[in-house]
Image (cartoon, rainbow, N blue to C red; front, side, top):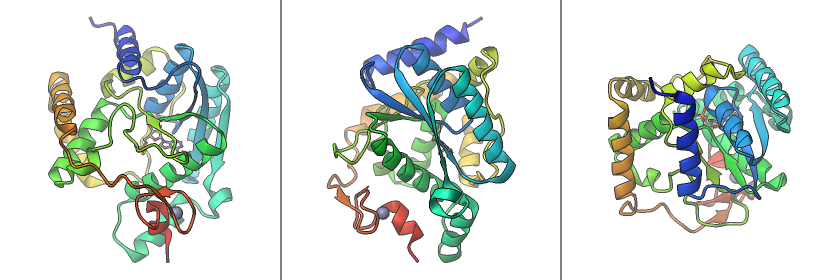
Length: 273
Ligand code: AMP
Ligand code: ZN
């Protein structure tokens, strides 16, 4: 039987080393959702001796958000990880469902896209204020294959051009590099590790994550082997240098001052009336 604990830890150590995603002198802010992936990311970085703190955005999604926040507080206190909570209702004046409803009344945009854009913008700004060097997220191998395939099917490969265990961002003092220590770890192995170590997580997915296209791709991924998933990512890495890169010139959003590829950042573009 494969020893999942050793397998996962070896893969994460190799990813950190091979892609030089962080070192022990840097401050890393782990974006914690309460789910298995980001919890394991924080657990392993802490176990390996990195200087981490946690950051959670409470999206105001009723009981689900309360449960996530509580689980994260318990996990961070048990593992002696400093934690900052950002309450979207207090900071932005509305819960995520109302923010989303406002956007969707004007244009047809998927739930997860709106939430993802807003979360990313908050994370970058907060990480900068906290003066950390990197933001770590819990994206795993299955997430990455899924995103890559979705971009292939939409013929939008350029959207994958900056992806990797460390985001290939153009350096800009206002843009905090993002790292994905679980980039090469299989979702099933994460589930198993978290179960074996009894880590405090919320097993339910977000109640608003109803993107049917992603669900379909996920169903397909469940039918292919680990080897095939790894091949897809390896093939993607082979062609990545040949993909037309997204625009490199970073400017600052006219409304909020955050780094952006256009006059308005993605968040302000969604929220504008
Ligand atoms: P998702 O966008 O839900 O697929 O989540 C991708 C990654 O973003 C997770 O692995 C976390 O690292 C981070 N993340 C998601 N939701 C939150 C949240 N509410 N607060 C902080 N980080 C989050
Ligand atoms: Zn903006």
